[in-house]
Length: 330
Image (cartoon, rainbow, N blue to C red; front, side, top):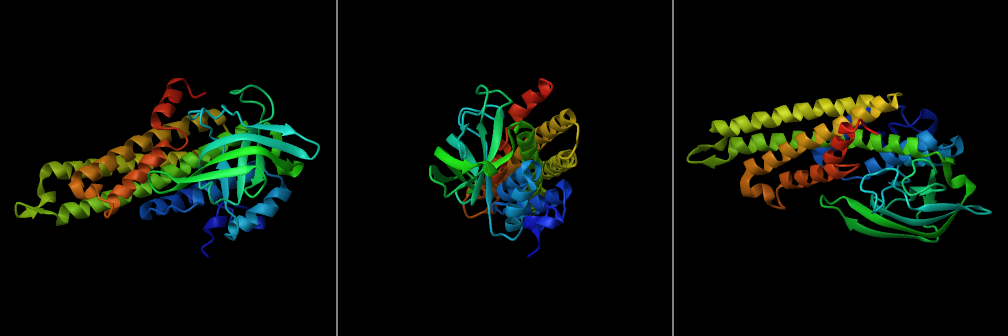
C-alpha cells in the first residue's frame, strides 16, 4: 500500500522512479525492525537486473506485477565453487531451435525457495572463469527441470539450492544479449551491497538503542550497570562505529549509479569492508554488554547479531573485498 515494492521502477511500470538513496532509507528501516521479507531479492536484485538488461516487453510484463506484490523474484548467480568470484560460472545455456537449454546448479539463492521467477546466470561461451560469455535468463520456477531445496540461513532468512536439468526456455527468456551480462551482474551485486549495507545500519541502530536501554535498567550492586565508566566508553565506541558505518553506507548508495566502473567498484568495496567491520564490532559489543541474556532466543539482540553476520557474508565478506582493494579492485 505504501508503494515500496515499486519504489525504484519507472512510473510507466507502476513505480515511483526512486533511486539508491530511497532504497537506502527503506533498507535502513527494514534493518531496524529486522524485517526478513524478500525485498532485497525481488526489488533490489531482481528489479535491478530487469531494469538494466530487460527489454521493454520484459519489463512491462514483470515489473508491474512486482510493484503490485503479485510476483516475487530471485537472483541466482552464485555457485558452490565460485567463492565470491562473479566470473566463476559453470551453469551452461546451450542454444536450441526454440531458444535455450539450461543445465547446472546455483547455491545460496536468497529467497529462491518462494520466488515465482528466477533470474539465472549461465555460460553461453568461454571457460569457467571467463568474464565474457555469460548470459542472464528469466526462468519460471514451475518449469520442467527446475528443482529447489529450501533451508533457513543462520538469521532465519530463507535460501535455496537450485538445480537445473535440461530447462528449456524460449528466446524471449534471455535478458539482454546472451554473453554480455557481466557488467549487469556486477551492477546487480553492487546494488545488493549498497542495500544490505543500509540494512546493517538499521540493525546497528536497533542494537545500540537496546544496549543503552539495558545499561540504564540492569541493576548490579545497587545501581544501574550503565554508571560504570568502562561500559559508558564502550557504548560511546558503539555509536562512533555506527556513524562510521553510516558514512560508508551512504557512500555506497551515492555510488551505485556512478558511471565510472572503476570508481564504483572501489567505493562499493570500501563500503562493504567498512560496514562489515563496524557492524561486527557493534553486534559483538551489544552481546557482551547484555551478558548471557544477549545469547537467548527470547531476546532480540541475538537475532540482530545473526542478521548482520549473514549480511557480512552476502556478496563477498570484508576480507574478500579488502583483498580486492589491495589489488586495485579488478
